[in-house]
Image (cartoon, rainbow, N blue to C red; front, side):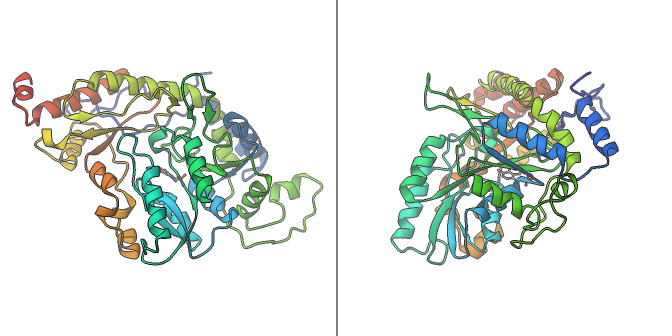
Amino acid sequence: MSHRQKPLTLARDEKGSIRVPFFRPSIGDAEIEEVVECLRSGWLTTGPRTRRFEEEFASAVGAKHSVAVNSCTAALHLAVEALGLQPGQAVLVPTMTFAATAEVVRYQGAVPVLVDCESKTLNMDLDDARRKLHEIADGQRLVGRQVEVVGMIPVHVGGRMMDMHAVRDFAARHGLWVVEDAAHALPAAFRAGPGEPWKRSGENTADVTCFSFYANKTITTGEGGMAVTDNETIAARIRQMSLHGLSHDAWKRQAGNNSWDYRIVAPGYKYNFTDIAAAVGLHQLARAEEMRLERQQIAEFYLEKLAAVDQLDLPELPANRIHSWHLFPIRLRLGDLSLDRNAFMELLRQRGVGCSVHWRPLHLHPYYEETFGWRSEHLPVATAEWQRLITLPVFPGMHDEERQHVVDVVVDLCAAHSTSRSWRRAA
Ligand SMILES: Cc1ncc(COP(=O)(O)O)c(C=O)c1O
């Protein structure tokens, strides 16, 4: 049975040039056949395939408990709810992240305190986190009001893990819980140094770790997410709140000797996962490392072929990380180019290279600016870096011609729009 599905021909425009999408999911025959079996089985919603997916997932990341839900956003929300986040409290959230990381704090009526990023990794800068905590302790109304900070939600941007030992030490020192937003980090691992043991994201690296199976993530079920934890009480609360706060779910009621007579024990949510999605997830999970290795090869190809381009800063290949390479962000050296990031991206698009930006930082979105008064100068690194960020396509099943096309176009554009004479002459 063939695992992977590659398109038979490359996508081309009317002039015959290759067009590379930003992402193409890698869906094999096994996923398709399992979905068909699930559809024929008579059980479509949360049931036996979801349970199997949860068990296999927990064992893959080294966690004791796992709860599958219908998005990473749902997992993050259930995690902060289970940890008791209350209105008026506050949580450290990186400004360099997707909407979900901060909005779940707002769902609870609490306030995200935005933290700047490290320029090298784009991950949360713990020095800035410390500064923000001190400012709050000094009585500064950083978010327009007095708040009590109770937790933090670090993100592994692009799948390059933060040092979770350092994060947990920081959290312990300040009495915070940690919810790890690992939407990009499956599979990913870190170690303290050469010879030290590897630790996977989710392997007791936080109070709760949350993963995403959105359409363009490292494994996908279309939409979906997983919360993992080693804490049985938190796992039970997350499971219960993922399905209306019921005392037991429909599969248990139908399949076991459990009573039909459930009880509503809390006003929960409708966040449960479906067996149709689990049918896809089981086979995606089995290929997670194989797909990561494919992405790593593409990342290494980009790193080698773009190394000599003076107008770019590239991500590093870190020694003490197993990088998921969900994203490959390049940064333009704007001083060496005659055009800005948006114009560069438009030219990439015209030349058939799908790309994106991860992300416009949260403090530069109207909601966070207007509600909490965040300004560029509060988060200077993210403010500067995002203006030169571009994410190139990286996905398993990418053809050699596609990755070569990406490199050719990026090199061409840098040469054509360089402000340095030697580059113009070389081009
Ligand atoms: C860092 C991060 N966190 C959370 C999410 C939310 O994931 P989901 O779409 O599964 O809710 C995303 C989605 O892109 C993300 O990039």
